[in-house]
Image (cartoon, rainbow, N blue to C red; front, side, top):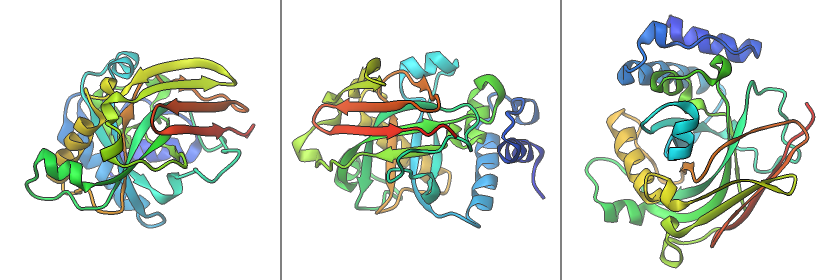
Length: 256
């Protein structure tokens, strides 16, 4: 039987109608209850989709300020969320999307049990530039930390750029990001804005995912969190992000 919080979010996605927050059902600060709701929906998604990775959310102070939360969270990435090959990207299935630029990690080893910072470093195969399209089933993005966790960390879609860079050639903390919409710069940031270092975000995620029974695995993609402020997605827009040392990643959005 589906819990009321999960059902509210599922109905919002199904009807394409944002819903009230779920914190009235699970509490605004009950992290464990929120992840339980997330897992419930993950089990339902696994009937039609496959897990390909995880995302860290709310790593940037700018994004935390935008949403009024003060700690990171994580969500699950499914294969049908990867729209890297789509041009344009359809927006008809999204409710109130926003976009942000990130460093993506491609893993070559599991991160289970006890691990050290060196283990986290060695688990990374390559890095890539990425755009994450986040979306909230909660009306007006009126979210507490519990709301966004329950809503799979406000996940929707992601785009990976073509570049693949190894850690021994580029420190992710040194990455500088500039994101443009239709040629106009709308967001700037750096690796240092992502929990101080995208690798720190990866280490946080590895521990959190392990502790919640869903550890990071070899072959998975990790979106390590926004490097700067996110901006609303508008049909017809063209987004390009440049990440120093990683190259560019772009997304074009369709009218429907």
